Length: 115
Image (tube, rainbow, N blue to C red; front, side, top):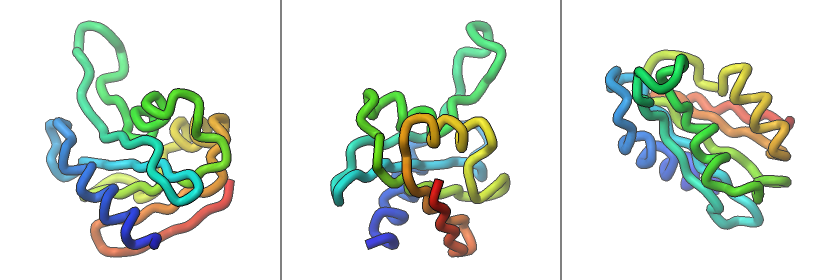
């Protein structure tokens, strides 16, 4: 089942409008075997905020509307960067009550972490 959720996260990553195509990321939050939220990284309006990118994990948490407690986050990164969430995203996932993070990079390496 892990491979199916990772494959879906990979498909979600392709929705990204991030200008560096190689760094597209998708995240799916799964609770009790059902997807409750998805997110992908995107570029914000450069004039509106200092941070230019919305990370896929934060996008998925925002769409979960506070219902992520006890769930698993599946994350796929297309190229470059970390295969796991950055420190900010990891903390946000933890504070939202995510219990497990499963990540895969473009080389097929899967990392699972209980948080």
